Structures are given as structure tokens and as C-alpha cells.
Length: 337
Image (cartoon, rainbow, N blue to C red; front, side, top):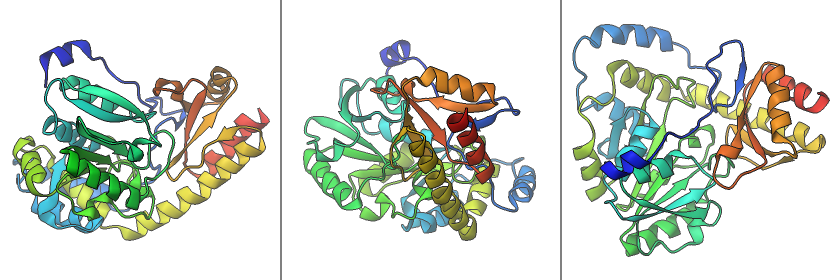
């Protein structure tokens, strides 16, 4: 990291409410977890008395099958954010410019500044049309957080080709792509692309911290060289592998999220709210009085995400898609008051 960047960069606000009595729609986490997780975690505790196998052969094999690539392209990390930090660290030097989408995940800007980079902000829905010339790194979030759109893979491939010609690394954050049936950008097989994945949102275990990066050629070698030794704990590696094998859980989750997202969006639109179309497990809602909406939900025990913390948004809240009961409750509170 760049010392001056660390000294001048603060924390970034996130969703998530620690109060267990609150219905938490501020964090985009699956309310369900795959069957057998507790047993896998419990059995991994004994193995945690030894250091993990730093090669993580099982985790790499399962993750590779999960996204459709070869195991040697997988770089294990302690969550998606750790993969983002690692990718930025091996891609930029202090003073380098980085194409950063906005509004989007606030940690991109933070990590770029921590490493001494200079963010060049671009509207998230225009970034694939921009020329990356002069930038060491370009970042794409798919589906974008907080707007929810998945990047078109053909357009992403064209952008990756332009990045390659410009000598720009392309970082594609697919933290929420597992909630869809869209193919991963990892299948593009380009040496100028790094893809990062988070496991803990889809599988309802954000406190576990499991994820990985996918890369090829020189960038894979850089990531592999720079990653911390034993960066993924044994319980996280074993539970993550167990979850990625559960195809039925993933299928059922996708169906539920699609169904409940449409019910939530339709109900809010019918009540006069402006709601963005989304491919993600959340919707972005424009409100005339966001403070009133947030407060009304809070009075009824529901936490929503104040999306005004995202660059460029000044009248929005983000609502996570959860169960049918929670959808009904949110609509009851926000629509019927």
C-alpha cells in the first residue's frame, strides 16, 4: 500500500444491521444457507489445529468447476473484498489512474486510494463504451451495486480487448453474479482480465469470508505470488467447497430471488415509487423523501440501506430481496404505511 494513501483514506459505509431483532434488508445476503453447513464447519475445526494446505487443491477444483475454468486459474482469498484488494495491489502503482464506475461499490475508490491510485469516475452504465487509454486498471461491477444490472458479456469482451490493447488490466467484480444464471467473465480466457467472486453472499455466510480471484498468464502469476500465505482458513475453505457443490441450493435461490424481486419491484412501482430494473438480489428505489422512508421502515423494525452513501445518488434507498414474508412486510410498511 501507499503510506500517503493510507493516511488520507477513511472507511466506507456499508449495509448490515447487527441488531438481531431487526429485519435486515440493508445487506444483500441470502437469508438461507445450504444444508449440512454446520456439520462441515464443525468437522473443519479439528483440522484447523494445523495450518491449511496453502495450495488449497480441493477448493481450487471446486471453484474452477463452479465458474467453468481450470483449477490453476483460481486464486483463493478470504472473501471477495480480499480478492479486490489483491487485484488492485498487483495492477497499479502510486499515481496511476483507474477507471471506477459510479454509483458502485464504495470499496473500489477506497482501495485505489489506499494503493496511491487516482480514481477516474465514469457512469457505471457507460464504462464499457469508454476508452481505457492512460489507465492502469478499469473496474466493472456485474451486477452493479447498487443499480443491479449485469454487464453484457459480448460488450464486456469487446471492452476487455480494448483494455488489452491499451495495457490496462480489467477487474470484473462478480460478487452477485451467482444469483443469476449468466456466465462468468472468467470464461473469456483473457490474460488482461481478473475476475473476483464472493461466496458468502449467495450462500448466506458473510461472516465466513470466502472467495477467490480468477486470472490467467502473467496476472495469475502476480496474484498467486502476492496472495497471503494461508489466507483462507480451513473452515472457510471447506464450507465454501461444500456450498459450491450444492447446485440445487443455487437453483432454488435464483428462482426465489427472481420471484421475490419482481413482487417487491411491482408492489413498489404500483405505489408510485421509481424502481430500477435489477438482475441482483436487491432493488434501487428513488424516493421523494428518503429520510422519511428509512425512518418509517425503522419504526417497524426493518433496516433499509441509505443509498445516498453511493457516489452520485441523493434520493435513493436500496432494499435487499429476502423471503416472501419479508417482501410482504416491506410492502405493507412502505406502501400501506
